[in-house]
Image (cartoon, rainbow, N blue to C red):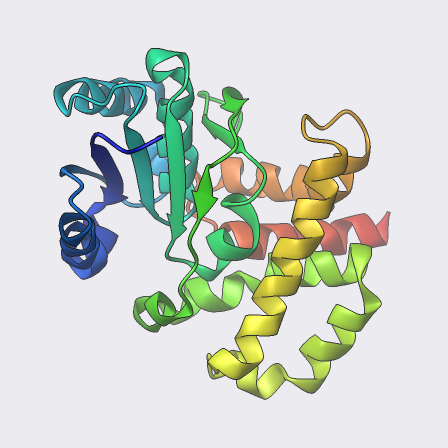
Length: 246
């Protein structure tokens, strides 16, 4: 089924860096596209902001042959994916993660949503993306703190699911910290593979998928207590350490 129109949801920072390149690419493919930018980070994941994004989809004339493109990190992916899930009872969504954390985790698996006043991701839907496009080149603009924090989730996969990945993280640590694509590509690919396997076996978290929540109980509490100022990957790392100490 062809695409009638694309609605690009991004944040103000990512939009300035990569929005024009995406718009140009869509134009060369003959796809009419509109862009809406939200504020960066978890502050965008509210019901009020969801209403604004849905209004954007309406004004952009996104019909059942249209597509929502989430260009950004995990917060944009969660918000845009949820908007795609509820607009016209579900339109296609393409995830284009621009952070390492989103590439290895949130863009995969179909969990979408916004935060309630007290609970992270309490309001949402399972809505699988039609496509996930991860380009390691966009990581060149990712702040160092955000880049390093993502390894909290990457280490989670290694500890909970794959000793070989753990060995790779140790042996290729220097290259990974330098953002070497040669070191990064197999790590990102393996994390995606591991998560996809879990989601395929338990899409709606009826049992096995709970393994992906390792470190998240305490981690989400840390994020909430910080007013969502704490980086997710660092909060998960803290949560894994707390789980180890139980």
